[in-house]
Figure 1 (cartoon, rainbow, N blue to C red):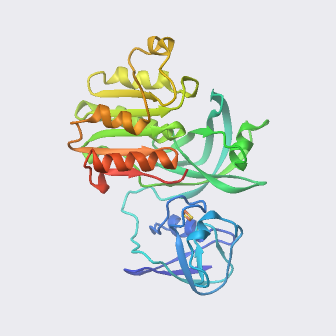
Figure 2 (tube, rainbow, N blue to C red):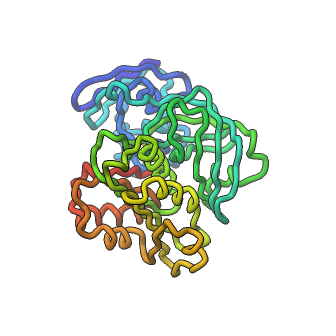
Figure 3 (tube, rainbow, N blue to C red):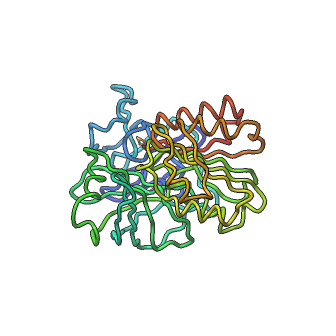
Length: 347
Ligand code: FES
């Protein structure tokens, strides 16, 4: 099927395979159609159908709440084209910059799954074909028999990656996360689409880094720290990572974070924030390279960063209320410009 998408600045046309979501067809053609979650919740990918027929396999998608009733609007990340279609996209749409990783459909097999905490898993997939992505990006994952897709950020950072690593938080009633926590997952096949997301780090930003993560939001920050360490970025710039969870039993990746810190002891500061209890002495003693504090992670970040917000690029990931609080703090207390605060809202 041919799709003609008329945006505010210009029109773009692209092919859409039978059954393929219109958003994914546009993105894999190198066209930066608007999106945030890619999975039916945020409403960012709204378009208006001018001509042709589409089908919406998930009419209950929460993102439909943002559509104007009776205006022929639909979510591009949910709908498939049944005929050639002409659409109106209420945004400016550019082509992806040369060299940017273009999203594609991938197959994956669950290689290994192990518990990090009582409700968090670390899952490794082998993928085909290999994938280039930017540190901080995510993919959408889907399994047959379980409706919907979920966004998961890569933990690792590799060129032409053949393996991807993800942090999976257990969500009661969340189809995909419950499947991943269930029996017989190792060896199972999944479908992926990506890489996606604009909360990315590359060394050419030439700024000090502040990473603020809540819970499983640490995944993308691990990818960012991996790239920063691999490319010796922290020889020239400071890095500050703040990782917030509720209690000590929710902590994970402490050994991995200690290893990052060991590589750049002078320029990398890593602080773990517990919001509901003091850090037990045993945890503090077992991880002498890491800092610990008590409070909500955005408050802890504000305290530790006071007077140090010059020339900073900030990355934020976690549950939506935590992301909103951290962004408010970075704008108000850090006085960062919106362009220097990167986050993806897909939780
Ligand atoms: Fe489509 Fe979020 S609802 S991108």
